[in-house]
Length: 187
Image (cartoon, rainbow, N blue to C red):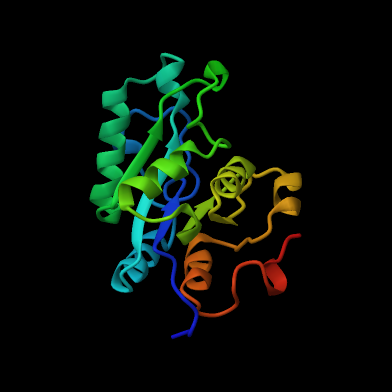
């Protein structure tokens, strides 16, 4: 165990980070956790680190999904990966101008507020630049876990990155190479 302090909470993007990215998914039967995610979440929970999900779901604002469909998908995520301490969902379309849609900080701030922790005590793990921008705007720490949809410029500007979610969680827990150092560093 590392002597460094653990974050109060680790927040996750949903699609492409916790589960396979199925665009505008309203079908709980299509929810598939990514490899190693369940074990990584359990490691956080065993150490007393609270977990949450912050997710843009513009399909609601675009009329492609209902809020109930998104709730059903989120319930399936919880069924497969265990309970999360908080969910923060932005239902708005990109042109709505809301303050919650990532890259704005609203989802991170709302999740931290509901957990009763300062945003600076949170880590946000996500797969695209808007996740990292939302973390930075809220004063949280971002860790990028690139996927094939992550743009090269997003990877290049990420302050911290990891090869996969389990590696990101190990770094957050102080086990192994910290995110943002060593081979995975992106500055």
